[in-house]
Image (cartoon, rainbow, N blue to C red):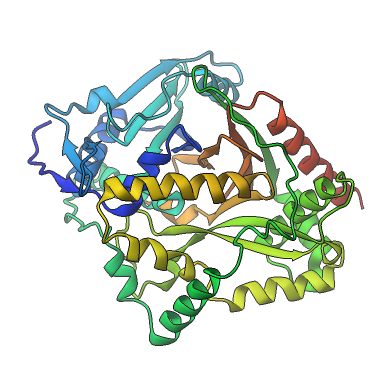
Amino acid sequence: MSMECKNVVANFNESMFDEFDGKVGSNTIYLITDMKDLNMEAFYASIEAAVKDVPLMASIITKGYWRDTWMPVEDYDINQIIKTYEVVEDSFYENAYLHFLQLTDKRINLAKEPPFKVKVFYNQSNNKKVVVFCIHHALVDGRGCFRLVRLIGEHYHAIMNNQTLKPRENQRAISVLLSSLNIIDVTKALASSFAGLFLDPINKASMKPLLPREFTSNSNSNETIERIVIKDEVLYKLREHYKDYNYTLNDILMHLTFKLMVKYNQTLETPSKNVCIALGIDLRRYFKKDYLSISNYSVMDSFTVKSDHVNDLSKMQKEFRRLKEKPIGLGVIVEPMFSSVFPIAKQRKMLNKWARKFIIEGSIRAIQTTNVGITDEHLLPFGDIVENISFVGCSPVCGFPQISIARYKDTLTLYFIKYNDNSGLVQKVKNDYQELLDEIIAS
């Protein structure tokens, strides 16, 4: 593949997700895509075209003192990053998924390989394929991953229809976000951030650890991945259960997660008064335009409620309203923005201290959830060849598994993920979540 790529200075988020990889978890994201009638020649060509729009897809990160750098891979070959695997025809999609789980090379090492690669599972006797996009968080966040797939789909559609797609300019600078904010947003963000300097962001005083602080060797590191697939008829029953309180589907899923936190909190000798979940927040909600934004515009923010509110649907309705009235996520970006004046070599020390203090301490008190929402629009350029797509987010090394959520057409898929799950916690949390679902369905 011949293309002119230049060295690109890494921004704070890109360096951060590279630095955290293997320390607080695995930072490789997976989009598991069930397809039929995929034209492989056009698919290869569409990825080549997308790389020209987003050259970081063909680069590796090298560490520097002042700033890290994305270095183009010499003699980049699209065939090197797309691997194919033949699986048996019976129960094809399920067998392909199981094969994917067993792969040992699905995670990405940014020091040695680019932040994007693809696994394709097929059987010569049918026209079905499972395509897994493996994407490093340093390149893009959860919703940004779907924007990347949409870009590939746009090129795929153009190639299949002998059309020319105008190159897109990818936006990855924090200035794009800042220029989209109004003065009220900025004022609230600064107030929230400065208030946070005097508050304990993980509420250690009011929330005790629900799990031990576990640190395991990465020598035999692996990801444990469990999933729950919820079809439309079950979604209908969930909505019916909450219909008198006008809960959105996202509210329902957050409420179920809070019910889990209450369940685990009640096992303590003296339960905490509060429970908390961590939420992945997409800051693209503040954009003035629908930019091509294959980058990191997301943050983690916390949502704390009183434990005795959780089983009161009316009180939780007010809690969800309170959350939506906040400039959620904005206060989190202020500190990294100001810290970027320091050399990245100095910031790494700050990052690792922050990770130990907040990410690890937070993960033993709260479950982290990332809901990328309805994904249908991102798959439209592929036409009708996509049968399902689901999202497997980053996997934490300590504390609770992360819950990743995505909906495509009439299917909602939840993944429970953890790195180095030696205690079987992923299976337990998934089973407990399924039990909550079953109780509602049976009611």
